[in-house]
Amino acid sequence: MSQLKALFFVLLTFAFMSGIIIGCSGGPSEEEMKQLNDLKAEVEKLQGDVNKLDSEKADLQKQIAAQDVIIKDYNSKATAVRNCK
Image (cartoon, rainbow, N blue to C red; front, side):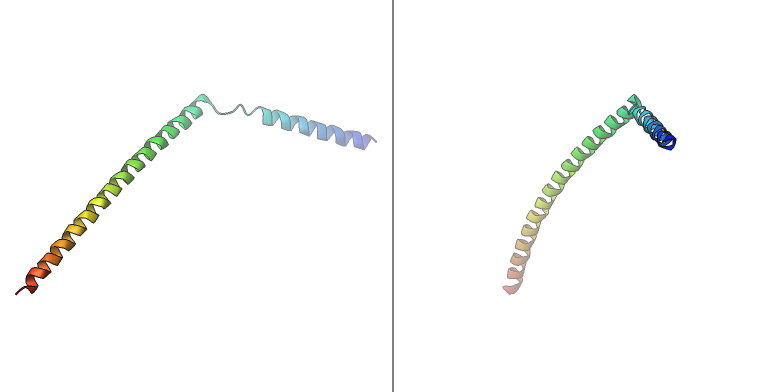
């Protein structure tokens, strides 16, 4: 019976100490929160830059496609002129 009480006391002490250790973490500091907020703002800015560059890329691809059409038309006309001899 005394061994059971001793085991119970050890388990109770272990549970109590675990609760104290876990409960005293305190959470993030103000400096850590500021760093987190700064990083979030930087991510949002970079995402905006990515979106802007994607839009510019799409515009450039449209311009390239339009130039390709003009070049193909020019080449077909040049071929037709060469064949008129």
